[in-house]
Length: 420
Ligand SMILES: CC(=O)N[C@H]1[C@@H](OP(=O)(O)OP(=O)(O)OC[C@H]2O[C@@H](n3ccc(=O)[nH]c3=O)[C@H](O)[C@@H]2O)O[C@H](CO)[C@@H](O)[C@@H]1O
Ligand SMILES: C=C(OP(=O)(O)O)C(=O)O
Figure 1 (tube, rainbow, N blue to C red):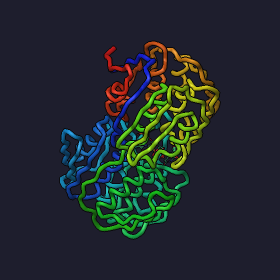
Figure 2: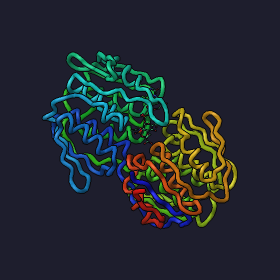
Figure 3: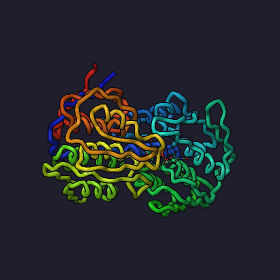
Figure 4: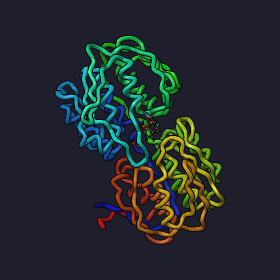
């Protein structure tokens, strides 16, 4: 099994390009199930999760043609089954995103129920309740969600008890082909939801209010083909900026979306970084300084994203002072802490709060990745640790970071992929 070997101590300097956003690409690929016309999706990141989604669409009978630049042409006209099997869903929870489009377009879906995962139990009750409110008949049998509807789904007013990103996306896609108007209240405002809505609008959907907590969808009878380019990855961008900050370096991320990172940039400034932005680039200059500890508290967009929490635990672990990190979205998202403690970090977790006391230095150690962003935080810790760190189970990182060793290597990190 591949591992990452990192020798810490290098200051990162240079320019790196942001890839397309995994969390926008996945719902957008699922949305192609809503039309029988040809769709081309561009700026897809080369990631394991994207391959899994393409495999899932292919297994249903969709035509999938990928070129060398990861532009993908999808043809759903020959779809011959509406099933997302356990083998694929267990490797990628986001497979649940095919549920809404399949029921809306084909009247039937059988999707394996995603179980919990390392970061929490992650139920999908709000997705199911919303589809039921739109007239779908849903049963869970033998670990599968079986959804059927006679004719078209019906528009409904749906209030989410909790802000859910993929829940909002599933119902947004379902509502696009429903009969009548759907209003999603307490909807997720994440930029990836907005990107999906823009793609659906390009396909002919009638959507307003995306980017606010109330989204209105006037269902249409059919959606058509389009060519759509996925937004840049704000979490990958943030991770590279933290890599600059933690090593006292200067990193510019290009081809990115500046407006989606406000909460993260303001914390980086509070940590002592000089941050400059252009239309589609962000530059962070730490000018050789050690970061100052920052307090963070995760919450739905536009607040600080849970997907950047682990990276800031790493930053605080070597910062000057003490930072508190509160995780409000997932109940078990501190798996990186014990691995960082093995590298000499001083972190105490109490419930959903981690108190991180900055150390002058961390020490390289063999560590294990437990989930996607935990892996990223271990990479960041390793960049500043004395000596070598070997990170095991990096298949987690390959789910969400495109060519991480090449990108960090180009910024000056000593990092390689090894077999043992
Ligand atoms: C593919 C994708 O886009 N993944 C992102 C998405 O995950 P995902 O969409 O799975 O996360 P949600 O926004 O749904 O989860 C938010 C909270 O709501 C709870 N919940 C959710 C649905 C539901 O039916 N019932 C329920 O109780 C979850 O357990 C969690 O506590 O948003 C998360 C929160 O920003 C990010 O960390 C993930 O990277
Ligand atoms: C938690 C994440 O992804 P997923 O929802 O696909 O598990 C993530 O991108 O950090």
